[in-house]
Image (spheres, rainbow, N blue to C red):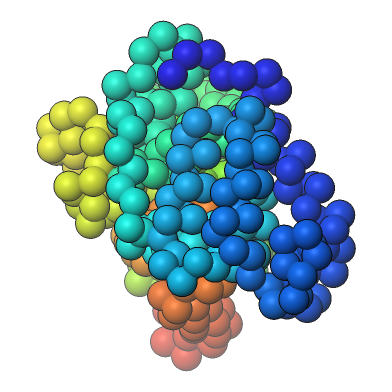
Length: 396
């Protein structure tokens, strides 16, 4: 494949979707019906013959990869009919699970060359192709992403969070005059962003603790993982889904500490980072044969070693003699909370590229589990501390 035609395939597809949506303004409120030209009986289906005619008339506006997917959709229906809503979803880049199954079980094999074999790509096209192979296990999804991605909006969530974390760390480093193991400074816990058990009623601390790090060694690894793993995942799955997994890991991390390590404070973005990395690694393992990223076994080993070293550092720091007794150093349990979110909610998100999560039963199972845990942790924080007569360290 050479350069994309102008206008780009994604723009052409979106324009076609807008034309279809104008014909069907109430498609969200009632079963979709195709225009009379394609569905005179108003049955909600169009014949594969008319579908192919429509493809031929608009073939110049579609990228070859997307046209290939459309042809696979036509060939997958032996009964000669295609659900019109599948077609609308396809042209608006919203593919249902039934649509994916129709493609995968179709009679026509996608026989064109793989995306890796494409020649003459510019730098941005090679980058998009690289991200597709890093994150998606199916060739048809990789081609779809490659043709649809426009970098609008860019992966703003992970970049913004990372910049804020670096900015807060530099500010604290200057104010404390300490950058390595900042957490050992006697005034470190006085910051209003840190989660502290005595101040657990201040709800913002369950989230804002991510902007405080134990030191440059703590921040460095989190930033590297956020950029190398989080940014590509956001490019593929979007800021909403990746932000949801990240924030869920952050909140689960602080709540897990409040339940399992009740006297310890929490700092660092490891809960969110471990949620994303765990979800990504689990997705690779579950789709091992389909993932075509280079040196995946070696890279998984390196990622696990780095995560283990960071977790070991956190465990060592937690039980190291505190710089502000009787309050201990920050807890390591937030890492485990992040991993739990990653291998549940995170995996469901990454395995359902461009599909409605609300249609997945596993999604609702894990959302229910997460909600139950959050409610349990809230009631635990309200009642358990007094019932257990726990002696907490004084507020900073």
